Image 1 (cartoon, protein in one colour):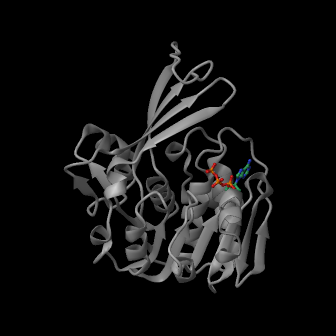
Image 2 (cartoon, helix red, strand yellow):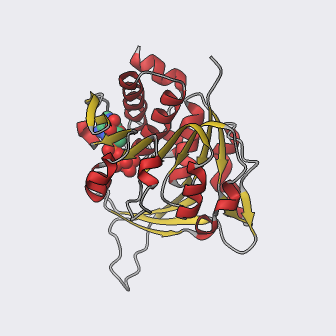
Amino acid sequence: MSAPRIITVGSVNLDLVAACETLPRPGETVTGATFAQYPGGKGANQALAARRLGADVSMLARVGKDPNAELALALLRKDGVDLSRIVEDEAAQTGVALIGVDASGENFIIVASGANAELDARDVEGAGPADAVLCQLEVPISAVIAASQIASKLFALNLAPAMPVPAGLLETADLLIVNEVEADFYGDALFRGDGLVAKTLGRDGSVLYRAGKEVAHMPVYAVPVVDTTGAGDTFCGALAVALAEGMEEGAALRFASGAAALAVTKEGAQPSLPWRSEVEAFLA
Ligand code: ATP
């Protein structure tokens, strides 16, 4: 079977992470931190997840004309995500997330969305064709609405981070993906359309609904947990790939759960995203 074509419309960030003993209070300076930087953004993470899981992926996004852009796109480029539709914004900076994490794992995150906030419908119109379009809510809603109009088979929307969206958008999605916080935020509105809704429940697994009725349920796979960052993004990328390939719903949920389980066994978001062969070996 040929690889499904997936377009991801979403955010690209560079995550700047300082690890310190204790987080600073407002006005305080702490020293002695160690520093690392990683490519991130839900859009980029999900694009890379889908790519490593076997799809032909094109990323639609905006970055700045600055050195951070190349760092943020490095893994997408290395693993063969098509970046030809990425717009370099002359006036905005590449999105950055400033992250502080203390010895207990507690963190703070400040996101400067920069160029992500400038993505607009014109950047999306005319893209495609694609079997599936995968979006999140870290870019303007006008871009998400434009994305909903270019999918031929599957419009998948990860409602993260939770925020009010125009009436009608949820009903147009063939697949909505939410975690527990987002599920509470949207409530019954998730079930007004006749598409699929996937709810992830952290260590309690995941559930898939169609027309409000549960069609599949997966407990988590027991794995050694190293870092859960990226589990949600892996799950989204994997479910989109599986459904775009025409996998049956229960099998698709199992595939997404297996991929997400592998992501928690490694440090970081993008570096921990599993490859298709690893997921197949794990589920065999
Ligand atoms: P994040 O934003 O931290 O990436 P999320 O809140 O979007 O995650 P979760 O519900 O925490 O998403 O996790 C997504 C999926 O990842 C779960 O449904 C499950 O399949 C898998 N997963 C999460 N935590 C674990 C774990 N400890 N062990 C195995 N699988 C896990």
